[in-house]
Length: 293
Ligand code: TMP
Ligand code: MG
Image (cartoon, rainbow, N blue to C red; front, top):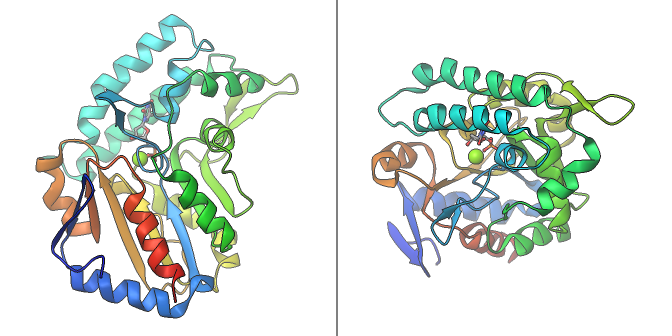
């Protein structure tokens, strides 16, 4: 059995589990229940996309915009200052979520206020993504294609920029009909210039509220009470809170940065923790297992 040891190495991938037996039981239940009872909920930045490649950081959906030609150099500098100030707080394991929350709201609010001033053109987003180093994790094609082939709904639930991430998924050729995105979407005027963001802000720690605002989506999926959840932040753990009559949830966490410091809290909250893994190898192995019945 693939997931039978406390610490399992798949290629260069380090897999950790607090309770491997529970993982195995959950997977067996999910397999027995069948793929027509499954839905997948995944974060985007640094979960579906790579964290780094050859030692160089890969961009988040915000970064794609930040480094593009659409943004003035003054705005680039300000967004970079915000990143330098707030990202260390995001990954600081000595602070609680309650302590970080107001600071993360501050980051998102300030970054989005800057972005809104930039008169971003909808038709320039394609080029911005083409020119970026954005990259879905190795094995993404198999992951997206397998879910589509078996009609398993994939919800991408992101505190990033919806218009940008949709373009990344589209350019990778995997924006299949089973994919739905909940994220921060831009509002454009009739000439295609961005004026504001639509709806409520989604930041790293209010995905629960975001989920509860989208009851329609989860209502449609009422017959799919089993959830595979993929995330890279502790804020991603609440993404399945909108799921109705939930039965089994298996949470897979990518731990990309400050691994030693953050491992205990990740092991406490994610069922499977993947250490500095830039691939979809483990989610794909799990899908293989669930598909085989
Ligand atoms: P996610 O929910 O899709 O992972 O998106 C959240 C990530 O976006 C989080 O890791 C921080 C990152 N981010 C930036 O890179 N730049 C920004 O300006 C903001 C507000 C967030
Ligand atoms: Mg993320």
